[in-house]
Image 1 (cartoon, rainbow, N blue to C red):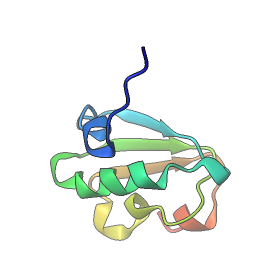
Image 2: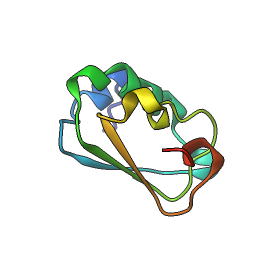
Image 3: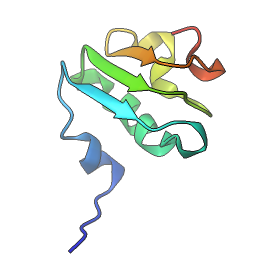
Length: 82
């Protein structure tokens, strides 16, 4: 049986030092990425791996640099500065 959880609960299993992968392009999970940003105060040194991201990638903003290291295989505009 499939069990769905909200974004807050889904992101709560991520801990400092983890490496996470985010699908990109038209399937960029912006809602989950926004929740990562909201929980950034408890997260440090997260490697955020993706192919390419679209939309507003909140965790790529300078204020999150201590929490998230952006490792994008194809650099798109939303993560270029990070």
